[in-house]
Length: 274
Ligand SMILES: NC(=O)c1ccc[n+]([C@@H]2O[C@H](COP(=O)([O-])OP(=O)(O)OC[C@H]3O[C@@H](n4cnc5c(N)ncnc54)[C@H](OP(=O)(O)O)[C@@H]3O)[C@@H](O)[C@H]2O)c1
Image 1 (spheres, rainbow, N blue to C red):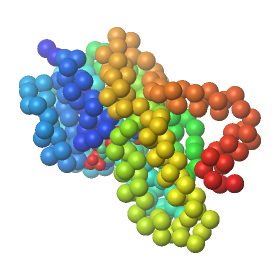
Image 2: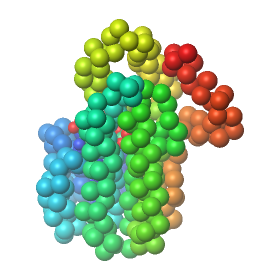
Image 3: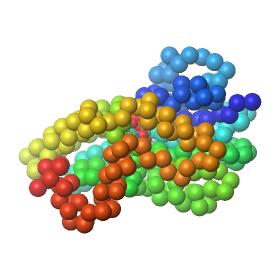
Image 4: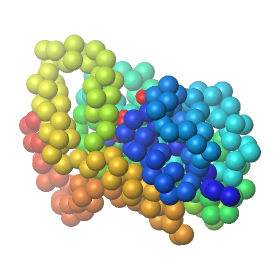
């Protein structure tokens, strides 16, 4: 009997890349998305279930857990998320709240809804997709930084509490080529108008250019990232952390080595804040 994994946020990006890879590795996949029609081109098979799932909707989450009752669910990959950016002094409370609703509360509710199913399977695991921005903060991405730091804290706490029954793996990618940057600018809403006439007007334009530049030049492709996640999914002894990408690896090391004042100066300069 095959093992099954449920993955959130499969419409694009890392989640989408994971679906065929897990299937190729012999796993059954419960592929979920807010808009299940985005998954209609996935080849049908006995190893695929498609569910509509918005991680901010508790009723939806409960229905997904009920739908998985009869499956030997061995893993949950909490991948769904988006990036809310903007200078903190221009950020509205509802923007911060919405960022946490998806990236943190959604992930937490998914975890709690599926833990009882996972506990039934020996060797079960939960993979929480955080980010290198769960270990360090960059300017103009305050809500996202905060949400991913929260994911790291929740995963580390959960591991202490249930890790002997269900392994908890933190996935910490650097820049990956996905729809993430496009969604980021959509989540800006009227931020450009709010920034008009403030010191952030040019800084935000520069920020976008920096992110694009990074995206084009340094980002890893989503399939390669998904392969590294798959390795943790199938590992006999799941790792505690999966750091993905040279940027994720080195930026953390550099930050740890540099005096804080140097680190801050470098970041301010890189983002045009000086
Ligand atoms: N790309 C990067 O550079 C990078 C780096 C570090 C960490 N990450 C993390 O990796 C994860 C996947 O992101 P990605 O890069 O693959 O970006 P992506 O291509 O934008 O994919 C994000 C996925 O999350 C889904 N999603 C967003 N809100 C949701 C909700 N409320 N309920 C259910 N699904 C929701 C999106 O669905 P819709 O199509 O419906 O919006 C989409 O399927 C995220 O947690 C992200 O923070 C990404």
